[in-house]
Length: 176
Image 1 (cartoon, rainbow, N blue to C red):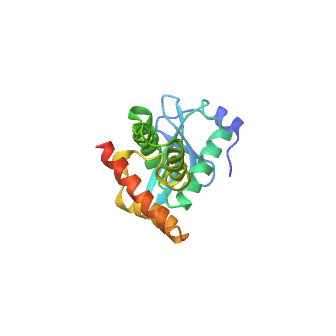
Image 2 (cartoon, helix red, strand yellow):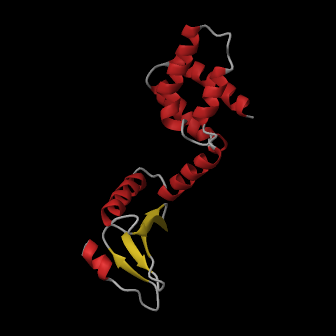
Image 3 (cartoon, rainbow, N blue to C red):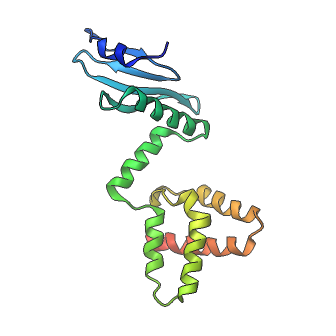
């Protein structure tokens, strides 16, 4: 049965930690010291994992359900939400995403004409950034790049694919 805010508030801690289940893997862990923490249990690649959402009441029941639904959508897409969360935390810490490095690389080319610079930036924004723009530069794999380029190639844009490959190669070299 789904949890209610009243039921959560009325629940008292016991000597041992216990779980109050909501639905679709969401539960509230109640510890002996009285703290209440939201978690979601899920399976990806045959392994059971859990994802922390934060303490109750800082994270309300409604917000926890929203976070659970977003995480479940990622799991359905084959993306591990806990790995996604770690990447987001690393981005905040060091901030070296492909997009940032690419924009630095782009800015260093002062001798490009305005039209050429705009064309390169537009191509990166249209074809590359949606797939790998927010990925940390040191976590981008060959498979990720190949997937991105193949999507463009499959649309029949062979010349743009070749140019994107050159841009990405230069950006990766620039990052080193």
